[in-house]
Image 1 (cartoon, rainbow, N blue to C red):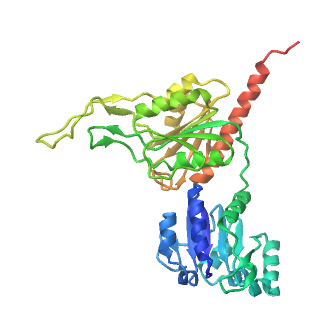
Image 2 (tube, one colour):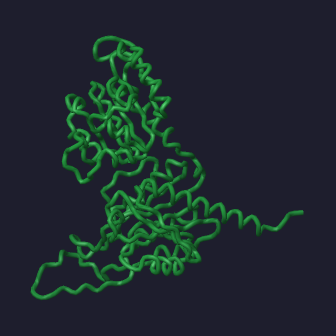
Length: 405
């Protein structure tokens, strides 16, 4: 999640473009606007672009009791445009509104993207403030040169959104350590038709699978995402294979599996489907309706049966009781390399959430408890784990090879 702070400058319209680019790149964006920023652009603009509420007031009624603390826990805080005023306040630790308080409380890297009149930018006080911010560990981009809204020309233009996006990528420090690897991800909840109108499904939003696909692509992998229907934009740089039913997902995954290095089976696949789907809409009649269900193919078990070293298969288990016991049973029965288990009844770990609380369960029964974290952060951690498992398999494989000569 990226927090975007917008201050009072005509360049606020560029912040809207930046928000759009971030969303298209797969980032979650939460926006904080100062009172002056709202004179240039309405909060509704950012709400429409990001799909998230816009924060404008420290004391406005929100779900969070301490928004300045929560907003500062993002992966990155970007202030764009950053006026001379916000630079001065941040440099000297002043916090008299929501955005300046978020900056002071931030636990993540903070990037300032200046925008102001050329004389304000060249003013020794502004220059000194930028030096002080850099010494304090903040990142401050150089303003761009060119014609300004006031009619003058020179330094002071806010950097172009594309340039800011590149700087954000550098700050987040994504390493292409998956370059050359093929990663297969499944996501979403399958739909099993009852008739042309109705289907059986589940509450999966697909957010975890999509976060994994985005993160793997950002780290250089060739990524294929086999997706059941979701309300999420396709991750950039990812090949998406749309499916609807468990049978369609089974066929797509098994076709792709031989050329895959790492699989994340994050989809919520229906265990059962109607034995006979009606060709016409089933009409309501007196009495009860009985549906006969039959088992769907078990995709994860089939992958566990077919995998060959050094292929890595990571499964997921959403449970409502006896989490660890059920996860261990599933891992052993399906021959996977790692099982990611969560109790969907816990706050912050249920379907549709942007966060998750999971246990990583390994062959042999060992497990690691992870705290509440954003699904984007969890995706990075799971990629690290899968890569380490693959490296161990490669090492073990090389030890078994006979010596030549």
